[in-house]
Image: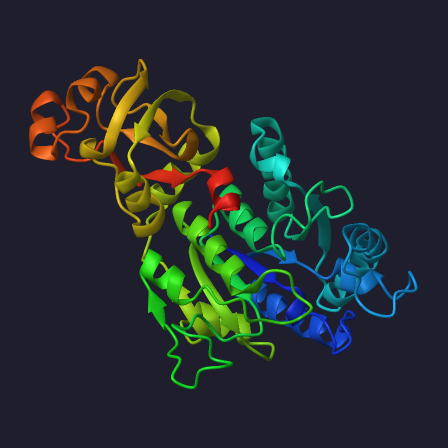
Length: 375
């Protein structure tokens, strides 16, 4: 049986002390938990914040900087200190860590995507623990990934992960803000993230030293699910906290249903490898169904068709001149030109595939840009 591949994301709130600096005791606890997981024969990739927290004291800042230039300077100093701390901690378990700094470009360039995938695959093959962070020192946007939440989701898709664990200082997703409303109820398990849940849990509670907030984690979880990766959002303590999470005993919320290997592989191929053969322009109802409710694209929601494609090709799905998703079509361009705007039972008469969906949800992924810009 193949090893399960787990991505563990540790945010600033889970790595810092009360003054916002790097807490080595917390880091060592996380390291012990990852080592315990590896000893149970899991492959582990670590997404870790903390470079700014590790570096700002040495630059003479009394507290964590708030300007972009200050954060980038602190990250430049702190990144080496952070990875050195991880190296020292993992060596206590005879394990080796490797550092990778990524930016947005990796996920939009097929060549860069392929290179990073090959590097990560080789590291895992050599039983090395990749420690990944955003390259804050050269990012042109303000800490682009949102405390590495979106980065963890995209890396999970890139490496064909089985599971994404997002550790934070809140024990899961609630229908209200648990810090201000005593009637707040935690979601134990969610098969998907609907618009209703996104609206209920859109509050930004979290640590003052993190940049992500719960909204950032929700959007990251939604992206991971779109790429076929199940998610856990929550907290934990002790060396066995990650093992408990993998044994369904975690203190948080589990998101996503069981996904087969073929499902994950198909999602990855569509997201990162497929060639785009055309475009389907959709109406508002279809856009909301795809983005907010996890639905398939039906012929009724298509306004017009671009390109000359066949059944099984991959097309962009466009709303108001913005690519919101892409997916593998069950209809040819000719069939959809005849069927656009029609109910599925009418459209199926024009299709040799006899499928009610123009693009089934299992063959559809949200676009990377939509994941970044989603509100």
